Amino acid sequence: MSGKRSHLILQVLQEVQTLSIEQVCTKFEISEATARREFIALEIKNLAQRFWGGIRLQTGLELTNQKPIHERQTELLEEKKAIAKAAAELVYDGDVIIIDGGTTTVQMVPFLAERRIKVITNSILIAQEFDHFRAKTGGPEITVTGGILYQELGLLTGHQSRESLMQYHASKAFISVGALNEYVATNHHHLIVETEQTMISQSEKLILLADHSKINKTHMCRICPVLEADVIISDRHESTLNFFQKPGFEAIEIILA
Image (cartoon, rainbow, N blue to C red; front, side, top):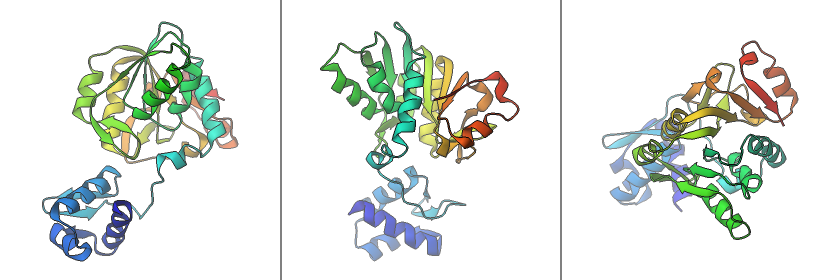
């Protein structure tokens, strides 16, 4: 019911721009505590902004439905597997790596399942995948950060996640971006981006992963300048072939899988 109710609240926000807790409680016959949870859920999805006693529509956004992660995992699946395989080939035995949560990075797990490496991640889904393969092989040593659970993506975020990451040093960070243009890599929520930025700061080498549907696009929150990347991996698609021919990418290793 909560997902449907969130969508209905968002529909009303599209019409009136702001809503108070009292208005939502009356209209949807829910408690103040439930209304606040709905507000938090909408803010986490970057669809609205909370303020004292109410919520407002996120500026510049139109009503969208974010698909559950299990649905998004099947989109462009072969492309994501190819990108993940190419990313895994950059990992060597003995490496300590950080893997950001995402529908592309989770596909790296089968290719790393038998490697003698250490993996640090904020993704519960990635940790579960490694645990699944661990029953069959020795597998990598997995460290999972603490933090606040971003349920839609199975990610741990917030200051606890960042503080946990600050304790480690990695040879490589694999970051699954939400969007990438010729200047900057971006994602859709500041909590995710803050964690990704900490991952980058704790790693010697930055590898960005983005399938062609994310290329030449921009989300609200800036992860890093594109030129900070050591490697960018995407799939071999007409749009990516054209995009990475633009000036400026000569300094970055581009892999089209």
